[in-house]
Image 1 (cartoon, rainbow, N blue to C red):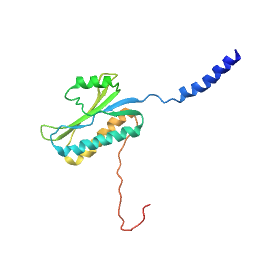
Image 2: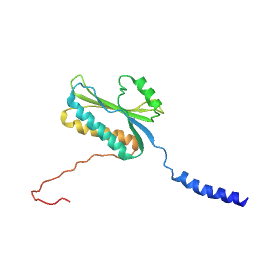
Image 3: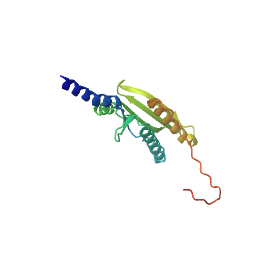
Image 4: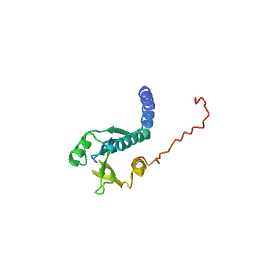
Length: 171
């Protein structure tokens, strides 16, 4: 009896810390790269930059398992896309596209599909007022999506290097 009790205590001593220290499961987030639907290759760089920024932000957050999903267009066939999300058991899917408005202004659209709610739970749409604010608008949209998911303040900064004219070893 004492050996069994002692064995049970030893077993629990090893199992309980494992359960207590185990990380909670991370939400599975699918990311369909933002598509350039403008027909103008000039905006490919903007879409690629947004894709890279969003991917890096989610990798650094470390709260999510991010899966990049190429080749699906949820704007064209939402039902097919939702079947894929459910098959892969993705908790959320982020996707977006760049289009042109009737006035030939660039318009960015980001959306988040939530599998638990089985609907688009979050959507952002911004029409650019000019080419100068294009990247700033893209960054603010990514900040808002990231903060919605993580509830952590995200922000972007600028590193400014100034040449003082003095040659120095920068090691």
